[in-house]
Length: 366
Image: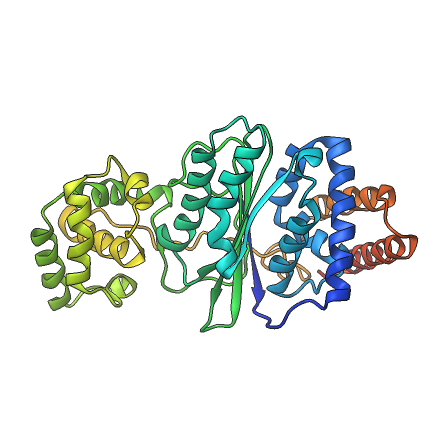
């Protein structure tokens, strides 16, 4: 299930080398202590918790209110476990930009060198489909540009990925956890936390989009000419405002080329359709529109974001800070830092940062 989302302002630049090297060293020891105490599965669960992940980035010394916290913290974790995967029982693939596209090859290479209970193909599928869901089935205005895939020898996995909205200058972070996952395309979120709501959203992973998902899969097996005709007819009509996002930039001929592939090899369901190469946001938007027009199967326009942990809550709006969860995260990190084998100066700095963040939270600063 996806367990959370965060909104963060987009910041450019990169972490200075002196800071990043310390982030790597400290994160390595924090992970080592957690693995010894709780096992690698607990590391996945914590990484899938946006509160804990945000706290970890702060402890490592990065600006808490920045999109760079996601990319830099995951990069530090990847470097921290590099060459120590067998000892720690933790593997990290992917990253930012072009590095994110290396995730499938990195997963396959790790599975070949080490004993993983789940086939590499299943892990690669989870990596690709989690990104496809957040970029294509959930069209909330954020384009995925960062994808990090964490997994352990039992085959359990977690994903931390981030999308950007260049128009607003904000980023949205998505967390996934394999444990108890039963459906990639129906309500995969346990919690989505954000205070930035999309005005025009196509949410085909909402529970109320079930009929639209079924209709989209059925339509993809129809003759392309028939669907292109429906699309051209729709573009000539005066449609309700809810269709604005669906009509944007849809080109019937490009749609037809994609449909030729799905017509020749019809997908069994929406998940299989979504996983097809070449089936992107525009194809899904067009199918959702036609499903509405032909079958009356309306797709959800509900943004799954419900509240913010990053900066909503200090005044109790839109919800009070979950202090118990935040305190548990801080206590676990404090214990890990206390036991970590890092230089005393770095350990003290990390503990001071933890104390400062906890003090701010108690005073209503978060």
